[in-house]
Length: 248
Ligand code: URA
Image (cartoon, rainbow, N blue to C red; front, top):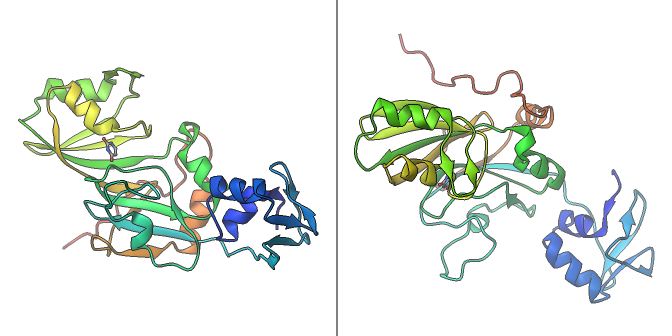
């Protein structure tokens, strides 16, 4: 095991989120080699970590792709009592979503307990490509598509250029690599075509092939490897390839 901070260790052991782990540590319930753990304690291989006197073991790293259905939230808890995506993924490891989708957005969502990979994938520097299908009010003309392609001025600054394709008169496909809050909805609103439904068809090259809404699967080792090999600002070989089978 590579060394890690105590809160990351507790999260990987499945007992709490990192923030929840900090509370357990502050409450004096965690020991490392029989000494009280501190917020800045670093855990190395061979260290013995206990919570309330019970020895903790790391869970194996897990990577899950979920077809998020509408009406579920990507936060840990919802004040309105809607189901969370974590409730849908019945996996022994404590996996959490990488980034967020709005409650009414459907589609590809990655969940993992690999905090380091999650952090990297969520970082703008890594330019993970997200592909969205947006149904909008009205019929965007070529000028609207051009504006999306050259970047749209939003209240938190100009967006990076998007790749845009018209799938139907009121349905656009947008490829973006930023992950600002409500980004696609705000971009389309800014060009005069509010979104009526939004679906993420691909995330970092992972498609929903074979996954019904609400279903999930573990990533193949080769898929995990490909995500790990990502370099800043460059899509890895094989990402973005069409997975559609040719029909003859
Ligand atoms: N952009 C949005 O507006 N909403 C999402 O859920 C994802 C991207």
